[in-house]
Amino acid sequence: MDWFWFTSSDYWLSRLVFQRALAGVYLVAFLCAALQFRALIGERGMLPVPQYVGRIPFRMAPSVFHWHYSDRFFAGCAWAGAALSAAMIAGAGDAVPLAVSMLMWAVLWALYLSIVNVGQTWYGFGWETLLLETGFLAVFLGNEDTAPPVLILFLLRWLLFRVEFGAGLIKLRGDPCWRDLTCLYYHHETQPMPGPLSWFFHHLPTPLHRVEAAANHVTQLVVPVLLFTPQPVASVAAGLIIVTQLWLVLSGNFSWLNWITIVLALSAVDGSLFVESPAMPAPPLWYGILVIAVTALVVVLSRHPARNLVSRHQAMNRSFDPLHLVNTYGAFGTVGRIRHEIVIEGTDEESVHAGTVWREYEFKGKPGDVRRLPRQYAPYHLRLDWLMWFAALSPAYAYSWFGSFVERLLEGDRDTLRLLRHNPFPDDPPVWLRARLYRYRFTTWPELRSTGAWWHRTYVREFLPPSRLS
Image (cartoon, rainbow, N blue to C red; front, side, top):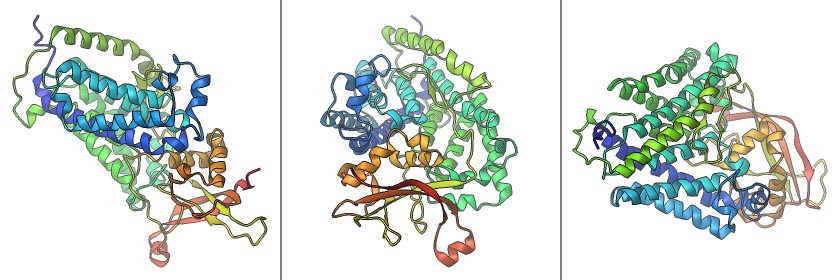
């Protein structure tokens, strides 16, 4: 059978870089799971997996943890995923036969799917499903035993198109500030987790903020269409997406969202533009049939995301099947004008009175101490810090977990305290705990010079009154 139309050796370098980079994102994701799960979804976590799988059937959230769960077993799966990811970075997928390489990628996907499907609120982010969808397609991209299949390369571009175009449409249909190009007046200050350069981005000249917003529309609404044009135009389009994503990497902490988008864009670059493509063997028949079947499946499942793109009521970051095979994406359809932060304080005094001395807990990533410059954590994902940002937007986001979080602080739970930067009660847990809502804003240049503070905060109201264990 003639397979000349089916593969393209021009993309062998793109595939190599794509696979190594994707394995790097997998490694970060599994490390996040291994290092944070006990306090979040462990047996004594805020949202325990055993309780969740007890009420959610397997068909709605397929996961190995439906068959068995223990903290030790979860840790084993997460660390196994990290080890396999590291092996794939080192090129293990190219050192084994094609079928074994596909199995290794499938194991990575299945392990992370199992984690996401029991992660509940803590894993309800668009980059989780984006990693799963990308990882599923990577299973069928092949290794050095065959040239990259054109159909899978096309599906990766289709995914990148939905990520970018969907994000562009949700902005145009959402907040008016995207249409009048003023959203970047606020975004760098009010984004979920600012980075070390966010203060400086916020203080860029106003005209440059308008250029940022306009360039965003071009990159997300025009450039993605060019991904389906002949080379080298498609490679140039991918390069523009990569440059835009690197700008976002510098301006804030968005977990691995920007990095997985960069990884997808790398798959659209024609490697023959940089190095001569080697001759590669034609794929075996069974592999070709499997790729065609997977392509047909993705095309059929794409009807819901495609319909969502053209809908007036476009949804952001939604999965249409429990395996997260084909999803819809979008980000920042609404941009906040004011930043609120929840500050948690405790006291070891037996009674609360006007003179009570309260000591403040510090989080690793989210703003707290006004004199502390925000740190760079992405692509590592601080799940608790992100949920605290959502809780500050509305208590409804904290309904399922915040009470359990407070209880564990009052108990001095070690796994929970490991999620924090500073525990003001290193010897014994506090007797009372309270949470207060503050408005945060970046200081001005004169304020920074005179006070050394990157933030200015103003008390707004009580979020949680003084509470203690019963």
